Image: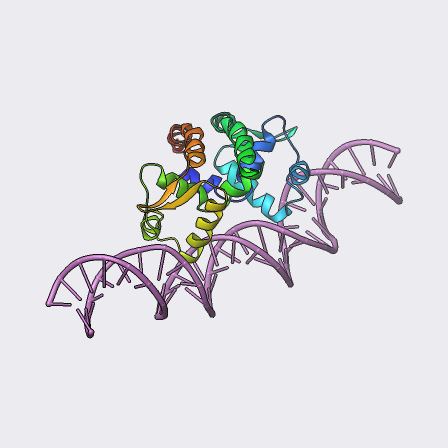
Length: 90
Length: 90
DNA sequence: TTCTTGCGCTACTAAATAAGTAGCGATATA
DNA sequence: TATATCGCTACTTATTTAGTAGCGCAAGAA
């Protein structure tokens, strides 16, 4: 699956995740993502744009329909992550 | 989410994916994953073992219950990936 | 016993990717 | 005009991944 290349690249999944609720500016994404370097963010934006998962709007970077649909399929991951973290702590 | 660190690291998601259907040996994983280097695979195995997503058995490396549950939550991703690839080709 | 074969895995170097920092040009606001 | 913030580029350093060789071990064949 080519999706592994995309999602397995550092920051990509995280960026999409942060754009779930609202559009963010370039520096807005940086702040959410613990100050990731602008050079990397820049290349991720290009990558995710070419993959048609995000686009540039007046309000900032934003998920496309495809991007939203991906986030929906990844939605159960949030619950899984918390139960996984619980399991690890025992 | 700490899950992003794990899944956003190259090969991790792919390895789990390959172990979905059957256990695989060290070199079995390498073959499935397009000959990934043994040094990287070795560190991934440690990482995924500590995360309690895989374990070592007689038949080879294998998913734990946690690992299976993750693969189940990621299952809709397969369908999404195909429709995404379709969308990209237009 | 010796020889071969395949295994998990280590050790090492080279290449690619990410982090970190400074700052430019454009736009908006005071 | 001065100040501030923005998206983004350019660069160096650090970390991660690729690539290759081969060790020690176990099992099977001769």
